[in-house]
Amino acid sequence: MRMWGRKRMWAAALLTCLLPSCASAPTPRQPRPTRTAAATPTTWPRRDVLDLALQAYQCGRARGYFQQPTLTVIDYSLPSTAKRLWVIDLQRRRVLFNELVAHGLNTGETMAHAFSNRLGSKQSSLGLFRTDETYYGRHGFSLRLSGLEPGVNDQARDRAIVMHGADYVSRQHIAAWGHLGRSWGCPALDEAVSPRVIDRIRGGSAVFAYYPDRDWLGSSPFLHCDARWAKEE
Image (cartoon, rainbow, N blue to C red):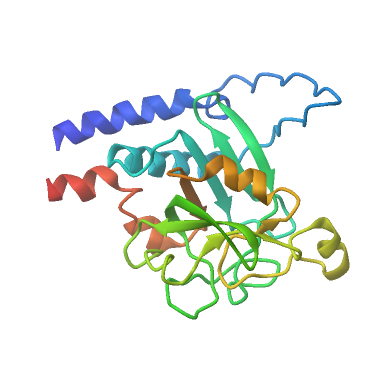
């Protein structure tokens, strides 16, 4: 346990210094975009959510789940009208994308509140995922996700929970209906940006889906890494 305690202290120090938003100093000013380059997003996830996402990523990376230093954070505690998905380049310490993302039909309307791992639930799942292979399906260019948390999201492959574009994820849909449309549990994106997001995160990066669910927060092996795997080893 002493060894794991030292590892935890080291990981905490690493994560504190990893990203500009985790430090006391302000985020460095991004250069102004040129006419030929898209602006770099400057909005970050809330500190408490980002800390949990980094903690889960660090644990998953130590276990060999991730092949690239890219972290996608989804904050389902925010309304669907907010840009609540972030793709973060951990090496360069910057947000690559900050986008709208839909939740499941039975997870809620504007606000998410119910999550499931069950087949046929049409609900979103929480926890840590790994991005896998891409394919072309009825929603076009799509990305398969593997849930890494038993009983929480490990049915993602069987449920066909994938990242894809959808016409009901847009500012136009929000203007017409007051909220985004809903998926059958997939984190669906705006069709205008989904190919670029998917191409950037595919092939072994981390996706962390957050909601303040006490049971999950208290039992996730990736949020209690030392205690969970110290016993197994």
